[in-house]
Image 1: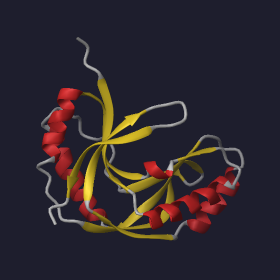
Image 2: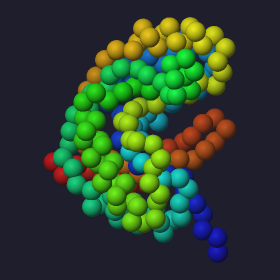
Image 3: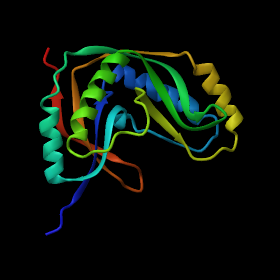
Image 4: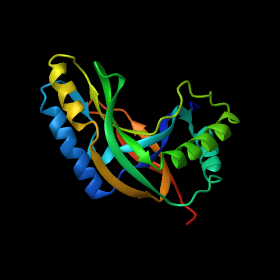
Length: 190
């Protein structure tokens, strides 16, 4: 019997319709630069707390048991500022920053990280930086126009929303892009 692997991650979904509409309008502006990029679908917008990779169903059940022990009160997040990885001159990933609530996200991430290491997950290589990926750049032709728009949008305020839960998400990769579905939801205690 083969154990099917499930590609998954732990995240905070962005599902406030006003916030989503603002993000989509920014994506539209970015795509108008002529740079070839893959925009994150509006129903896939999220802040990743921990990427788990491809794991077995039994390990997924243990992960869910751990997440059930993560207790947090609902809190506000403010999305503001646009940036990119790895550098502004060669943007590969375009993201929106978290300027309020970032410390709370880090606390949840650190608790998850500590508990997941006991299950054998390796420590993440990069320091956790709360961000919302909105696009991935596929080509650097006309990148100067993209850099100009990123500079214009650098300090933009997107808005605030309340985090009421964290979710374990399944990621099914398809030629048209990933399809995400919720496997488990841990609600805030209050």
